[in-house]
Amino acid sequence: MADQTNTQRLYSWGRSRFEKQPTPVAWAGSVLRAANRNLGDFPEVDNALLLAETEERWPQAREVFDRLRRRSLDQNAPLNEEQALLFTLAELVAKVAHNAAGMRPPFDHDSGWRIWPVAHRLISITDNPELQCELTTALGEGPEDS
Image (tube, rainbow, N blue to C red; front, side, top):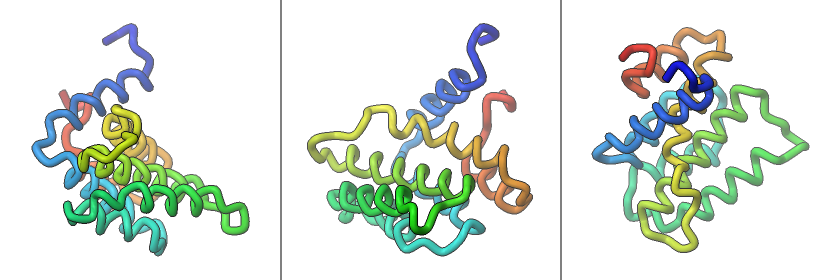
């Protein structure tokens, strides 16, 4: 791994972690829940959390994704960097749920692999130790731990 960039290393680790999850949508939701605790109140993110918790809602994932994307691009109420990463995680949760439901057309096959690197980025930029702890716990072991 010495020749991989940090980004490639995190992406590879994200793939490994995601593919080991027995319930990948639930795991993605747990990471999003950890990130959501301290970054504001966003109904769009709450919808993504509900989506992850309720398999019957997975077919609605594209609509949840579209609402998240519209809000994240809203220039009238811009998000700060931490909130933007929260929305990125929520979008990834929606993509994973959509793909798990077998809906067409599917989102990128590697959407779940990107959860770990995005959450890791959020851990690295926040100065909130509670958020760092919550996310670290939700993510589980990282490449630096192995």
